[in-house]
Image 1 (cartoon, one colour):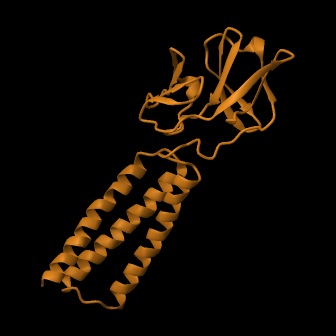
Image 2 (image 1 turned 90 degrees about the vertical axis):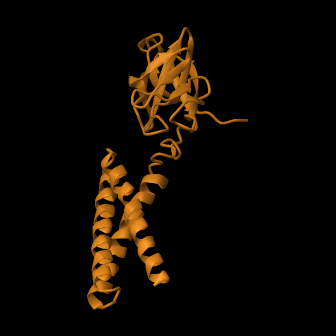
Image 3 (image 1 turned 60 degrees about the vertical axis):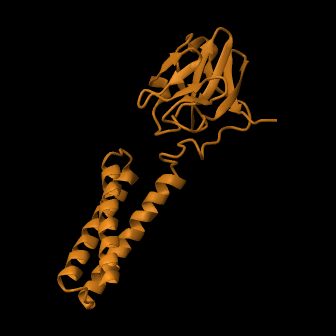
Length: 208
């Protein structure tokens, strides 16, 4: 009886804890997150049915209950795969810039005369979104994507040499990309800049 009660308790706790996956998924705007949410919701429903079916039948196992569990575990695997995709491919809630690189050689992205003073501008460097900020004759270049949840930093505010994300207000230092205000925890990739023939050129910065 004690083992049965413990097993019931573990299953109840699992069902309660699994609901947060559905809630989190509904709060995300990314397509893959929405899909993961649907699969996790289906898993929760199937395991809930399985739990109460077994409970009502005094934990007897038959073919129907076994097949229901197999379907539930299949859905669980798909939801887990999509969740892994969000983390390891898109860096969601870990570091949205985790897999961002950039040009290894200097590429032109904008004419210097087209970059206004102290106004964040988003440019594209061979498919990589980069944020440019001009102060006098100096140009700073960092990733244009917030490392927390991918917010568009060109829509953010400039505050004392920092850019503030418009979504959740993380702040990053333009000079070196470091975080000085959460919820972000990872720095932004930074880029070397130079002016050549009136054109702003950038390349991925690498520490020596």
